[in-house]
Amino acid sequence: MNFEAEDIPKESLPIPCGWRLLIAPVKIEEKTDGGIILTDESKKVAKHFRDKGKVLAMGDSAYEHPKFQGGIPIEDKMPKPWCKVGDIISYNSYTGNKITINHEGNLVELKIINDDEVVSVIPDLSLFNFL
Image (cartoon, helix red, strand yellow):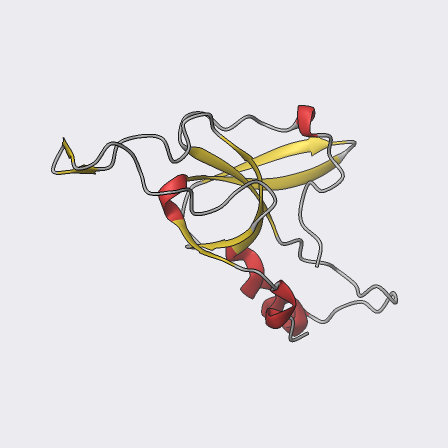
């Protein structure tokens, strides 16, 4: 499974601010490794992965800010980090902001989400591979 921006040097990537995470979504391929062009139906199935990605960077306040309830801090800080750089995570499809960057003439789409919008950490993404 490939991810957007895997070949982009870290220093060229946007830096997430505060408690935000920079996510590289799963790359939707146009063809298989063997060169077979995927049908539109296969691409639709692959879009199932668009709410999964790899954590590329974390803001310097990620998982360090207070948790609020009704505007009042309810604890010193968020619970232990839910994920770390390099983890594959899932998040809600409509979460965060899309960022498109131009890398060597190719448009690459990334996401920036808040640290508390991580839904799960996925230890083995191959379990989802049904193409």
